[in-house]
Amino acid sequence: MVLLAYGAGGEHGPLFETLAREGVAPERIVLVHNPSEPGQAPPPVPAGCETIATGRNLGYAAAMNLGIERQLRREPSLLLVATHDARLRPGALAAMVAAAEAEPRYGALGPVLLFDGSEEPFSFGGTTSRGGALDHRTEPPPAAADVAECDWIDGGTMLVRADALARVGAFDERLWGYCEDADLCLRLTRAGYGVGVVLAARADQAPGGSKRPGAWAYLLTRNGVAYAGRFAGPRGLAAATARAIGQALLELARAAARRGGLRPGPAAERWAVAVGTLRGLADLLRGRWGPPPPGLPGIGDVKNAGPGGGETASGG
Image 1 (cartoon, rainbow, N blue to C red):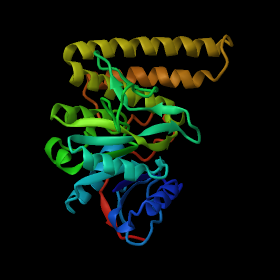
Image 2: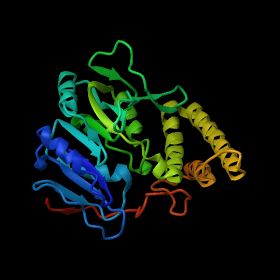
Image 3: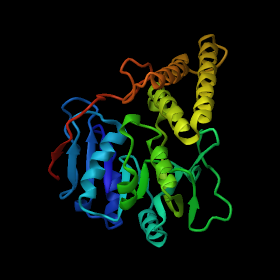
């Protein structure tokens, strides 16, 4: 397993407890630490767990790839990747593993995602429109058996087949964060693998866009338009660009309405989304990849971003 942790808040603790109850030994886990501050020490882990200290906040894709590379040396057949805020409910991992073993054609499987602490569905898997727009399916699919086919699954919890990763590659590090999960699933499906959600597996999800509205809008726009181009070619690129411009104009109108007292809420949040959207689109056109620009309004909890050294620390 590869577990990606950000900062020093210790959010990974409950996931380690869940994994222990599911019979996953610490020796089978590699924790990759993206520090939120320079010089920040990796979080404590159970004895036997290996830690990779990146030195800087590499984002999701590059940091996760460090752990994937390390784990693939051990020649597993299946590899679970998860972020520190993943909350697998009892039996979820066993259900995903059983489904993967029963259906080898699936390259990636995920759980049904529920809003944190509730039974309200967040995602029964991701969908992609003809024009390349990404969305979550919030209703259970009709006539699904054990696994519901979908276009992509959320990168917060993914069970991936190792031979599939060897064939199509891991996450696209240029994307840094957001849409890299959909991009990987697109490459898997084009290589002939299935992608699906295991209906017997449940996990909690707490969307984090509100913590970083400007960075969220920037990355979703830049990476989302790029993905649409990969998925649907020039038609997808044009459609996604038009969607981004329309969204930016809408957010500017919302910011103006809030600033003028016509709508409740802080204007700065909608302004950050508008600026992030437009900057993301502009940076895609000029070929700028990697983390959000540091001066972006609403960058929120995205800190200490940049290239890192990938140093290895011993287990706790």
